[in-house]
Structure formats: C-alpha cells, structure tokens
Picture 1 (cartoon, rainbow, N blue to C red):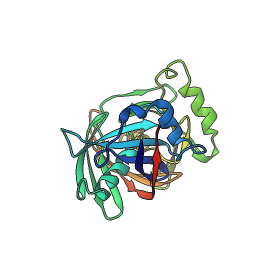
Picture 2: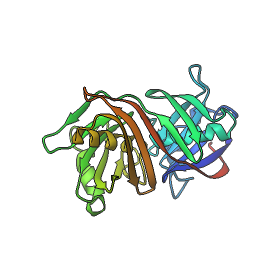
Picture 3: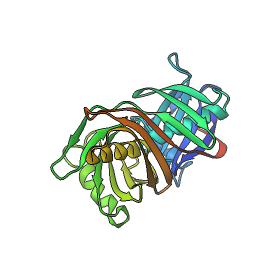
Picture 4: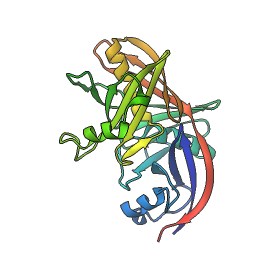
Amino acid sequence: MEFTFYKYQGTGNDFVMINGISQTLNMDLFSESKVRQLCDRRFGIGADGLIIMERSEKADFRMLYYNADGRQSSMCGNGGRCIVDFAIEQGVVFDQCSFEAVDGMHFGKRSEKLITISMQDVHDFEHFINGDYTINTGSPHYVSEVGDVDQIDLIAFAKEIRYSEAYAEDGINVNVVSSSGEGLSMRTYERGVEDETYSCGTGVTAAALVHSLKSNLKGEQSLQIATKGGLLQVNFIANTNQSFTNIMLSGPVVCVYKGITKLD
C-alpha cells in the first residue's frame, strides 16, 4: 500500500501525519512493527509518533495516535496541535475545529502563527512526600521540580521512575521542571519513545498544573514553559477545590515536508 504522508513538528515534537479521510488506508498494515519502522530515525521516516486523521461521527475528525514503539497510546498534546494545523491545511476544516481523541473531545483553532487546543479537565493528582507529583493530563505524568533542568541526568533519573515497580507495566512520562524568569523550563522523558523528547504537550500541561498546586495559585492562570524545542503556553483556571478547568495549550506548529512511502 502506497500512501502520502506529511512530516510535522510542534516545538520539536515530531510526527508522521497521514490523511485517512482523503485516501483509503488498509489499517491492518499498521501493525506495531510497521509503525515502529516508519518512526525509526535510521530505517524509516523518523518521528516521535505517527498520527492518522480519520472520519468521526462525533466531531470534524478523529485523531488516531501511535507512539514510536508502534503501540496506540494516550493523548498527545503537541500531536493534537499538529493535527489541527494538518486538518486546516488539508481543507478538512477552516480555522477552528472539534476533534475526537482517545481521551475524549477537544477543540482546536489556528490564530496567526499559533495552534491552540483544549485539554481535558483535571480533578485528580498524587502528591509524594518528596514534593513530586503524578497527574494525568490525557497521558500520565510524573513531575519533579529541580534546581536546574540542564544539570540533571534526565535519562538515568527518569528510567529509575519509569521502570520502577509502580510504573513498569503501563509506563509513565517523567518531567523535570525548574523556575525560569516569569515562567518554567522543563525536560521530558516519554514512555513509548523511551528517550528524551524535545517537547511534550501533555507534559507541559502537567508541569503548569503542578506549579499551580505547589504555588497555591487560584483563578485564571497563564504560564509560559520553555522546552528544548521552543515555548509553549498553558492557560487554565485553578479552582479552589484543587481541580483545573478551561485548560488550553498553545504554541507553534511547522509542516516540515511531504512525501510518499509504502507498507507491504
């Protein structure tokens, strides 16, 4: 099966994007091994994940997301932002849309050079005695505040948590965060990629919410977070009951190139 794909990146988080609405795909060919090959940076196109845009009966389109390890995964924030731009460029929608993802419905829009998507409300988190948190923002995240994110051995630190007894089976994304001027700086180790990525949309969202919890912020909040791949912004409402609503993730998106490949 030959098909057209597009390579997208959102603050360095990169994806193979496929329009499954305008072309007929044999989904049986998208096995774990084949998706893993497509995402391989030496033997394939190379990406943190693969995203297929499909028809939806509930929204303008559906986002089907695979991690680089070939398995379908939980919500990807930067992937969500990329597919919004992709849908606009493919003529599926105009400048705003609704889309269905594994964690539910999302809203997306393009304004000037930024793509913004809504994230799910967050009501639960776990706080550990060492001050770290786990929180699910569409994907599960472990968030640890450190003095300087650039001075930590992220891979060693993250693997100790990700492969611990508590998270070995299902996995967890591990984020280190430090204060940076009026915002935050962060680095992320992503499950499924099993390495550091240049950015993580659900991770940035998790870091913003955890910072709000630790700082006891309330009401409307807006935080800029610097990742290796660039700046993202998270807007949200911090409620008095320690829940979070109206969460919006914003940042740039770039279409890198278009190509044709095949799966046999």
